[in-house]
Image (tube, rainbow, N blue to C red; front, top):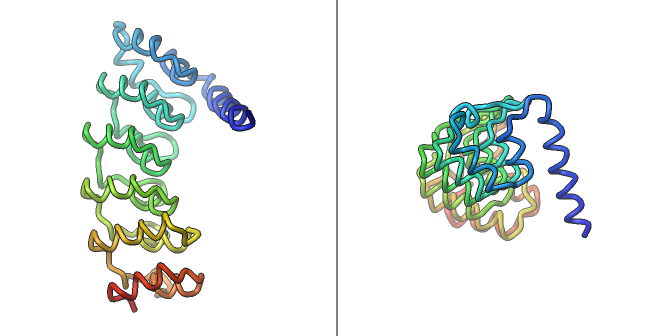
Length: 219
């Protein structure tokens, strides 16, 4: 019951924040009304609705991604919504799906021309926040898609560094470290202070990750 109430409050806040400039398509995305969205997408104004922005700069697809409206996101993408459209926070549907662990939507964006080299406001690819947040299948999907594993963001961190620095060192992050190493991540690429992934892992007491790094040539 509490989880449902929290979800309702979250959706309400998202909708309220968008009301000033929300299009009809934004509203039906917020209310998760797929039939209404489908009707709008076959209307004469469908193109302008797909490109409409709310006060946060989000297109309907960006909002659908944020709220994890998978079926509506599919309908929007099938109607040629831009998977690389950027909002005021420099998110795109592709980047947001990666960061938030929206695996199904992420796969749709990849199948419809997502720019793998695009970066968020921190200068990171979709892989970096996915690694930080423990989204194992998202990381696996992005690696398979060809996202560069050693990209360095504006903080001076790679996906491997964030999987250690900003994690709890648990099973999900251990698997992500394995995936990154298997994909060719440089295990000795340090941060701006010259501290390596292994040094960070040891400092945090992440024994399993430290062992894994050592087995793969980390110093």
